[in-house]
Length: 259
Image (cartoon, rainbow, N blue to C red; front, side):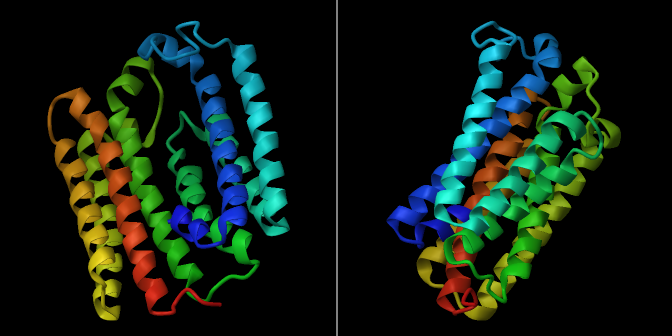
């Protein structure tokens, strides 16, 4: 969703916003690998830090450098982008360093997804359109679905390493069912509002394709193969991006994203 919004902000501003988001994601991802290094040594020894490909010192430097660069890029776009960038970085580090490995890890995960449209809109324009609360609410619901899919995908390795997640607490069946419920809410709201407004062919194709990818991910979760279960998260992430892009294009064409 955020990428589509940033793309319409002008090339220079879009570059600064996009680079800010990219660098902050690098920082959060690197901090995540640092936090997981001990458990990854048991469950995922091929990852960069456990395998010795990247040292802890180097990974720490990556976190510091990319976090600083991300905030500098965001500040160069606007004060609003810097404010949301700081909040997003804090949210990601809360997930990495405190709540990951607990049954509440999905909370900052979902909140981070909800911040993306705010970063794009407010960072690019300094204003918040009337429809933004609805977009943020749907983004948070999508974030919950993705957090559950992510936890489900890692369920086998998390059980072996003793990591507590929402999936290890609920079990595979209930996690997948709850994931499907949130995905259904996102799909129903997006498709229903788009049908009400009237979809152009390209946004309609994006929404239908996203819907199909998301439910393909749910279907793969019912297979016994752990490798197939890892694809649950990947297919749903692609599906939600496509669905969100089509939905935002439809809202924009109807003038609902104006301040």
